[in-house]
Length: 569
View 1 (cartoon, rainbow, N blue to C red):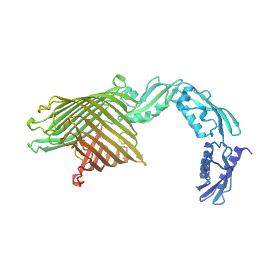
View 2: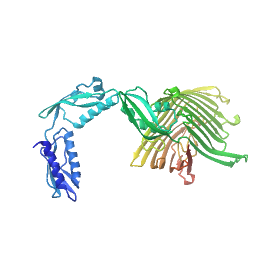
View 3: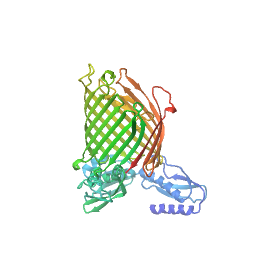
View 4: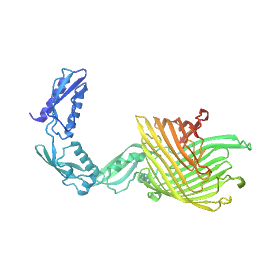
């Protein structure tokens, strides 16, 4: 009897014998030869019907065929009349490669995919290995302008258990990318979208780049995909169709308060107001404004303007300004101007210049020794990369932002012995995080923040200020002075909706303050829980956190409540 007919007959017998069967069965597997390549199962449990039996038996024969037993299959099956059903498995001979010839594949392609004929000589024929080889060849072709390539085994010769074959590689027609066609009511400049997703007319067809389009589009905060992209083929060229619409990404977040000044009795405005304008000029630019006044006579102003793909090039500009005033003690200002180079997706590197000014406020006769007037000029480099599944509420992916700068600081205080001193200064910053998905709606967020100032003369009005919602939760905003710090965070998130989640967190920090006569260091930590939930008006956030430092006990009376509201428009 022909072997294929024999297998089909066994399958039909299985289906016929299992018709109407109720209850679980056990398949007892008998093999015609002893197999040393692996240990095949002797029993298959929990077989409830013929379909389950076929699926489990196929998985067994697939393992044999992957190990080189190409003719392995079901020989016969006993009727389903008892709880244990006998199944005879034909293993057949184990085949080896006598020769797998590279055929007409170019040497350059062979080198890229790592193929060498000697790797297959007298080795067991592994069907999964051949499948991987075919996939490498086809992937290489698809990413090099040949989306219609084919590969198969040709001139196959079988001598007992030895097989000879030749790879036949047909590239097909060369295809290049021609047009990007955007459908939908989108007013964003198309050049921005082309640059962001890495589109270039005339570039060879690249399937890998096309697969990345949905991910890259998700990284654009002010664009939403209507439906998946499509590729239209014409002789020798391919057109990409995108279906997009605008998404509300600009946001306003503000809290204002009015209270009497405890010293003068005048009306005092306090608050935290943030305005973030995304793509207002339809060029993918970002404009950010933030004003904070959370304590009496202490305020902060932040301004940022970012403009990508300047003159339709990969270059962009980044302008930042920060002004901080701490009661009647000191003020600090920073001006940062950077030139960025954008890669496809949310990745960029930058070079920048930064000017920092620190000034003592008040009567110089009462100046603290840990304060001084100074001017600092820095030149640095930075990098940013992000690969998140959804920027606003991610479950999977990572992000990293880092900068390194060096320059010179001049102390301009008129205090005796300090004026006109110059010294070298170094500055390093890091913010990196990773989201690990758990189950269907949860994620773990691991984050590391850090910064370091290196200088022989450091003063309190020049160094970092940590604490609060953005750095170390459970502490007042910018309450801790640090010349260097590291903060590690682990946070569990449960995703409620697209822009809503519950979370619990633990922040562990280490910092040093070398601006005082005696070096100060500590390991404060904060922990707590919170919620972000979306309403028709925007996203409301509430966080309750407790903190501990200097071996003090954790006090619930000292808990911090951070809350905010973001309205998108």
